[in-house]
Length: 140
Image 1 (cartoon, rainbow, N blue to C red):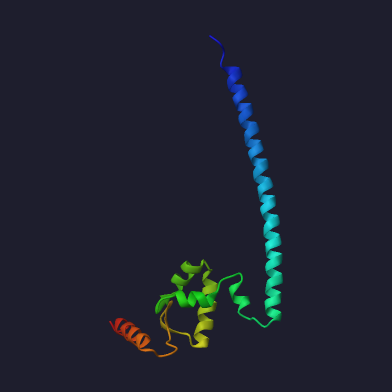
Image 2: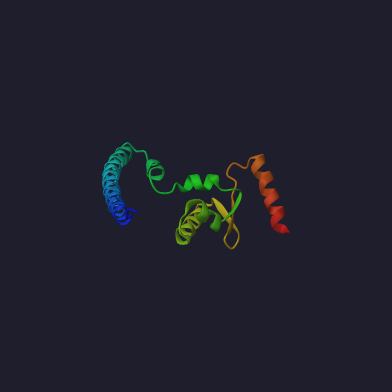
């Protein structure tokens, strides 16, 4: 009966070579993607600068980072700071500072600790009806 040991050793060597080759390819892919990311970020910087020079201040909010105005729109009539953190992945300190800013702007009102209610802007009938529903729920 022939020995299996040389075949197992050959398979182990081939496996090691394949793993090394796979790691080299992975490192090359990482290097390539980092280069593409750097070029993309540089292009983004140029576009942001051009937009700022043209007077488009909204570009600061919508390009990169969290668009807190969009978060505000996506939140329900009542919401919690925890919901904001889960929605955005932001740290509690950042959420607290955004909530503080929104309170100072009059966009929200505190209902209880960590819970907030949007203030109506136009006073439309839908907003008033929703606000009334929230008030009656809070009274319970």
